[in-house]
Image (cartoon, rainbow, N blue to C red; front, side, top):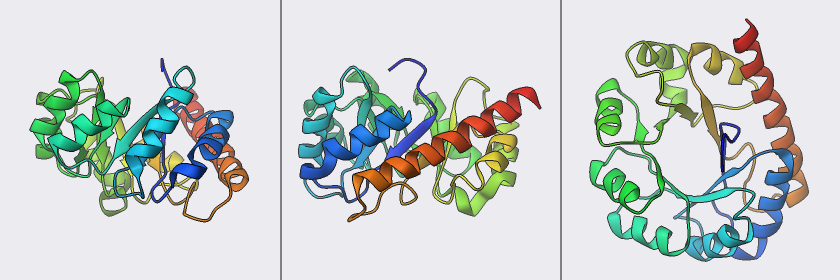
Length: 208
């Protein structure tokens, strides 16, 4: 997708029978990057169902990707991007070789620059609740401006503005949006709330 809203919906725990309905709600709300963590039940089946179904509307990718074999399996399932909790240059490299986007997890400037030198598409600062906006501001001072930074883990619509003001470009949003058992309709409403909050925070920074 071109120029998506910088918000990745994380559907940890989702199962294949519900993935289409939930993704429809997220896309309707304006979210076009949807991550299905590999520690979800039959995650690759969910990706196989959703990726072709929404090919013209959203990028469906995988999270909690910890091995090259996982990267290759996600590619076979037609996933568009790879998100990891850690920074592994081998995973970043294989992801790029297969034509997918790479979002490795980092928490220090050292990890961030390892990821950047390996070619990462963007950085997942995780868990962002530990370093907070102050930590992101400090890292942003030395990171290349063109590399997007996503705050994940602890970020939510109530604090989007603080993170954006500190230099975060976007967010990965998990349990605020989806937990197992939550209806697709409620996910959709929460997604609309998140999109509204993020657009407000981004606009405030542009015009502030």
